[in-house]
Every structure is written in structure tokens, then in C-alpha cells.
Length: 313
Image (cartoon, rainbow, N blue to C red; front, side, top):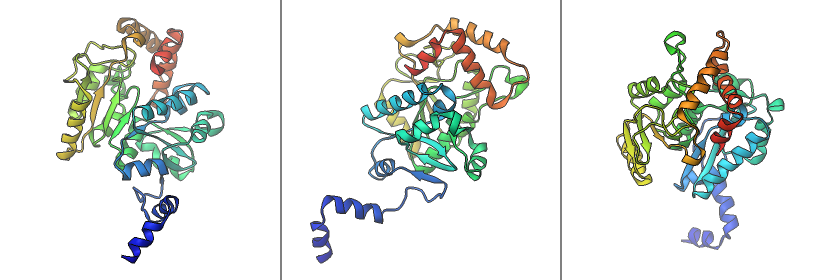
């Protein structure tokens, strides 16, 4: 009782200091640093949304990339959740970034970040480098620290011409072995969407379009010519699907494809023509991490920046 009475007299600030001292980290991995805000949210069962960082390091020019990243975090906060942008800073994985961190990463001329997927993590960490986590890398870390929801623009997939190049994004593999719910505007338009959907089925990943259409969206466009396996008509229904997956301990991901709003959407037919032009301009020897950034930059040029504006808005 005397202990209780003593604690009862401690001011709120002292209690917070004591709590911080006594609590344990949400993960004991020495390579991962979770921000206090994100750790508090996870411990208190508050909603947390994981965010990737390649949009900062490889998706847009500086300082537009920094502005976009801060705006995205603001949108998450406005909806009542805590944003947890994941990135690697000087060999340490950070879950939850400050604006200073975001700005440092965004100035790529000095941060020299590596596009970091699962296969790159050990190398980037051991060499104390900085990196932007891909969809794959972000899913992996979010799963480890216990963040079940991840929002991104568009996931990777099976590349066009993969029958010759075998270029299949690690995003799909990671989705197949984690319990993370990914919310995106579908698959990047530059990819082979029918084959990507087939591959997701093979990996046991739930795929559903959010809304009342069974059309699977294609990032910049509301349609792709491919049908979505399921329709998810409300946020409540999406939450029920996520909970059921957790209850069953399925350990496979879920992809909720949210079509881009009509006023920001670009024509599917027009985008297909643009992507074909971008593919024709690509060096046939280009491979690996170079392919997606090149194609996205070419698409931006060919659409006079409209594709970039569409992806931001």
C-alpha cells in the first residue's frame, strides 16, 4: 500500500519519466530503433501506419520528396493514426522519423541512400550506410516490430517481359510470408498486372479492391483491365478481414487496392501507350534496381509531369 500511495503522489511528468525508464522496447533487435511516439502507440494499442522511405530516397527530386513525405505523415495523423516511416540512417533501422531525419534522407547528394530490400539490409547495416526501404523492406521491419498496417502508393510486381528476364519484385514474396495489410493504389502501371495478380494468388495473398468496383486499379489509373478477386466495400469490412487473418494466424499478407480518386486519375489507355514508349527507350542491358526508377522517370517526362503529380495527389 505504501508503494501505491507513493506512486499516487508522483506528478504526471515524473510518472512518464519512470515509465520510460522501466519499459522495455517493443523489439530487442539491436539494429532497430523505434521512436518514442511509435513505441508508445504500439504499447497502448493505438493505430499505427507504417510508411516506406524509397519515395523519399528514390521516388522524387529534392525537396519535393521531403514535402511529400511530411504531407503523407500529416494525412495519417489527420485520420487519427500515428505514422511510422521506416528507413535506415547510418546503419540503424529507424521506425518513426523526425522531420530532420526526413530532410537528411531526402537530400540524396549527401545522404547517398541505398534502395534497400530484404537482400540489402545486412549489407547496408553492417557498412553503416543509409537507405530507403522498399515495400519489401518496409513490410519486413513492420512485421518485426508489430505494426500490422502499411500504406504505400503502388507495390512492385512481375515486370513486363518477365518470361525472359525473370524480373519479379521481392515485394510479392514478402507479402506472401508476413501478416501485414498493405493499402495501395494497386500495382505500379509499368508492370504486368495480370501476371502479378496470378503470382499473388500463388503466394496466398488476399487481394481486394476497396469500394464497389471489381476493377483492379493500376496506380495512376482507376482500371487496369484486370478484375480484382474480391470487393471490400467499407473500412469496417477491411478491418474484419485483417482481424480474421490474425485470428487464423495465416502469416500471409493482404493487399487492399484503393483506386485513385477520379479527379486525379489518368487514362488507362493513354498510360499504356506512354509505358510502351518508356519500355522501348530502355537500354536492353538495364536490370535490377535500375529498371523501376528509370521507367517511372520516363513516364513522368512523357506525361509532362502529370504522372508524378497524380502519384503525389
